[in-house]
Image (cartoon, rainbow, N blue to C red):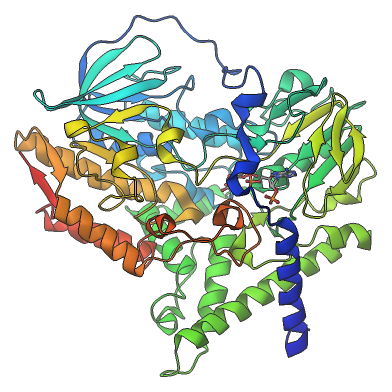
Length: 604
Ligand code: NDP
C-alpha cells in the first residue's frame, strides 16, 4: 500500500496535519509541577519516615539518588574496595523511579536481562522477559544488600546544598534532616524523569473528587495493590486517565479489569507495538548465563543491534540479536534498509530515504495492528499514531488496544487539543464536561526543564561556580560526567555521553566503571582532588556542538522528545549524545579507562 508515491505523500501530509493540531504557543509552559496542584504529593505513601539523629561524619563517596545510577556506582565502588559509600534519597528505600512508580501493570519496556543491572554479580534470574515493577524494585534492594549499601544510606532525606570546601578538598552536604557531613567525592544521578508534571489548565486544583499522579497511586481509593491484586473498589466508579503515554499503556489494561467506567483521555495516540511477555525458562537462562561476562555481552549486543544502521550497516548484516525486543527490532529494520543501498551509493540522502522507508513500513504495521485488534473502526481510527516512530517514545503492550473493545472502556479523543479545564465535577473536553469520581494524571515528567531546578538543591563548586553559571550558555561537561570548577564531582546521566535512551541503566553501568576506576586511582595514589581541565571540557563540548544531532526534531509531533515541538535553539545543540552513537561512546570510554592516563583530568 505504501509503495505508491502518492500514498506515501498522503501519509506525510497526515503526519504534518496531526502535528499541527498539537502545536501550541506555550510549549513547556503548558505544564505545572505536580506539587503545585496536588496537596500531599511527595509525602511517601509506602513507608513511614523514621526518626533519626542528624549525620555529621565524613565519607569517601556520597551519591545523590538511590536508583539504578547510585546503585551501580555504589556497587562498583564497593568492588574497588571503597566501603564508605553513602547513597541519599528522598524515598524510603532504594529503587528510584521503581520505588515511587507502583502504578498497576508497571513493567520494564526493555528486556529484563539487560534492563536489570548486575544480574550476574547478584546471581539473579528475572522471572519474565519484561519484569513487573515489584520485581524490579526488589532487584534494586537486592543490589543494595549485596553491596552493603544499606549500611551508610540515608533515606527520606532531601539534599539541600552541596558546597565545595576548597581548603579541605571535600564537599559539604546538608539535608532537610539536619545532616551536615562531608565527602571527598560526590555523584549525582537523579534519573532523566523524576519530577512529575500535570497540564497547567484552569481549575486544576478545583476537582472535588479523588485525583492523583501515576507516580503516587492511591490504592487506598482504588483497592488492589502493586502486585496485581484487583482494584476492587472501582466497580461503581467513573475514572478518567489523562494521558496515553508509556505509563497509561500499562495502567489502563489493569484499570479496565474493574472500573465501572474508564475514560481514557487522549491527546496524541501512542504507537503500540507487540509486547509478547513470557516467563523466563530457568534451563534456557542457565545456558545463556553460563559464560562469565554474559550480561555485558548482552548489553553490547543490544547496543550493536539498536544502532546497527550506523556506520556500515552491511557489516552488521549477520549480527545475531540476542535480546530480541521491540527496540532491537526497530534497529534491525533500519539496518536492513540501509544495508540494501548498493556499495558506493551510500549518500546522506539515500541514508535518510532508507531510514524513512523502514520507519514508514513499521508504522504502517503498527496502524494495521490497531485495525486487527480494535473492533469498532471509528475507535480504531482514533487510536492510530500518525508520526514517525521515534518522534515519540515507542509503546509496547499486548492488552492496551484490546481493552477498547470492552463496554466499560471509553476513548475520549481530544483531537490533539487536550483537556481544557477542570471543574469541581470533572474535566472539560471539547467544550463538554465529563463527570468523574477520580482523575488519574498519567501526564509524565519534566524533561527539558532547567537541570539545576530539577535537582532541587544548590550546588556550589570551586570559586563560587554554580551549575546555573557554568551552563549559562548550554550544558558543559567532559564525557557527560566531569565539569570544570566542580572537582571530585561526577554527573551520572546520559547527555553529552552515550545517550542510550532505549536502555537507560546501561548508561549508568558504564559510568559506574569509569567512576570506580578514577576514584580507585585517586585513593591508591593518595590524591585529594580530581578535576577536568578547561581545555578538555571545551574540546568535548566543541566536538558535540559541531557534530552532535539534537534528538527531537521540530518536524515531529510535539512531545517531551522535541521540547513540545519548539525550534532547536543554540543551547539545544549541547543537549546531545556522542555523535557516533552509544556503542562508539562505550568503546571510547573502555579505551580511555584501559589507557589509564585519565586524559582530560588533572589530579592534585
Ligand atoms: P508521557 O510524557 O510519555 O505521556 C504523558 C501523556 O499525557 C501524553 O499522552 C500526553 O499527550 C498527555 N497529556 C499531557 N498534557 C495533556 C493535556 N493537557 N490533555 C490531555 N493529555 C495530556 O508520560 P509517561 O509517564 O507515560 O511516560 C514518561 C516516560 O517514562 C516514557 O516516555 C518512558 O521513557 C518512561 N516510562 C518507561 C516505562 C518503562 O520502561 N517501563 C513505563 C512508563 C514510563 P501528548 O502525547 O499529546 O503530549
